Length: 225
Image (tube, rainbow, N blue to C red; front, side, top):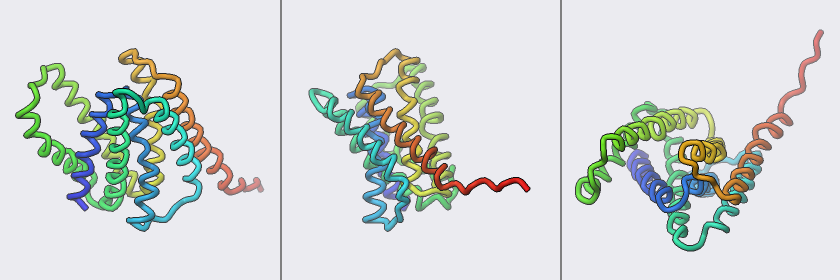
């Protein structure tokens, strides 16, 4: 599973960064989060995964949220960024499914392997076709590698040892819900109303899944003696 995992991780990284460069940061991450639908589809048809019916609630809301963004963004120059964002969602789904099947291996080693594959595949392009980053850009890139790529994926692969790929990718939808806030605070990039609306739908679906449905299945409290 390591070879397809490394290739999928590299494709996900390149497509996601391309989408972020060609559209807004908020739209890039939300478009990537079409991944739960791919996880459901590929998990059932190819990997033979079982399905928890409660996960259909946040899945439906997330697809509605992404659809709202797509309806308003799929035009002009943003269409290429939208296409890359959707493709990165497919690659992310493959990463989640393949990581689930390698979760019994050493977690730090799996994360380091994926990052190493990305570095090796992109190194010729970097050397031949791109200028050397400044010192400040190198520091920012190092922080990005640690805080955005290494530590979160270490937590992600550890979580996949305990829960399904379907549930893991749905929980990750919390990221795009809070992303516009961080982007606004750091760079003043104000998301459009349809971006906020899509995030609101995702938040409602997750709330229903992990608050209402979990509460309904909880056993009744034991009365005091």
